[in-house]
Length: 151
Image 1 (cartoon, one colour):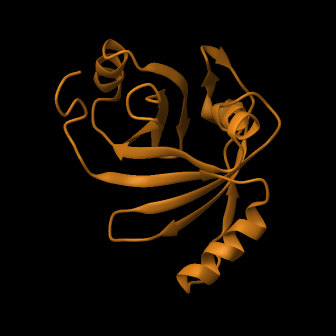
Image 2 (image 1 turned 90 degrees about the horizontal axis):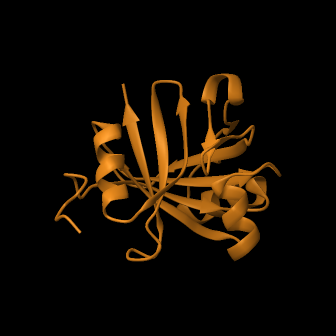
């Protein structure tokens, strides 16, 4: 595998799958000694253009974000029942860490490099102000890698 394939070592987010986002957000807020953050829902397909394993998906998730450092977020994710990397992982492995995210520039080039290193694109989509991609790094890195590219 190419050394420093993403050209960054800065982790920007750790994503955790949960079955009950209200309970998990309350527990994390208590643990961190902070307010419970707003819980949002990802955009529908018309905005997200989400694709899972190469096919369009209407999957959505409820999200809560905790800032746990100057550049690091903890993201809680409660997926709906539609097919997605979130639902697949929650059904197969249960609650817990889903991904580690890196902010990148040049999403297409980074995805190509990761795929060249044997990491398969699982899911991608758009959000207000950018785009995301989940790549299966489980063989070598033992976790899904998320790329975030902000405009």
